[in-house]
Length: 182
Image 1: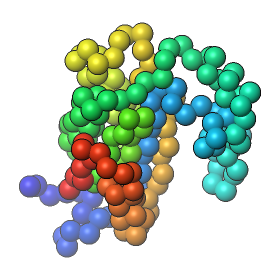
Image 2: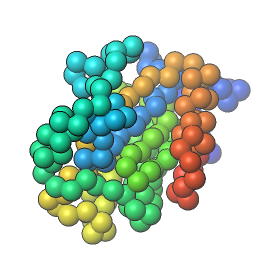
Image 3: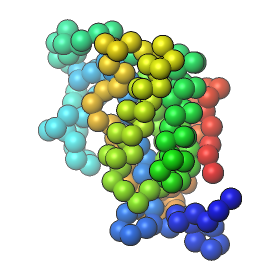
């Protein structure tokens, strides 16, 4: 394997050109976690660290559910395999170092190093995964696949990187398409 710009000579991860060591990126499937849900959610008023989540609210949840353009998108085993393969291929294409990826039935977690903004990574993964799902007749043209945006956490040191990778690999429960990447 060639040199990795995100690893030093001893193999330790390092930050590059002012970018963090890595990103912990999460994105959800369309319609699977709406504002008002009992799990809480983040909106424009509740999006900074330490801010309370949007609280459970049955009326808000009902209004948000009524606004959906189609049924929520759930990823079955075939969908998950396509999305995982696409995330890996897109990362390799752009030269991003993918540490871990875990595609679940309603969301995707990944840890990646790249000398670019995390939104670029998130958008590339979502757009290419959508194309592939449609290419293999796993999603219709009218079906939204992903929710808007996603979570992009910055990992500035080895400890936070190790915790994020462990969470992605081991903190999600069993799934036969969960894999670590090196």
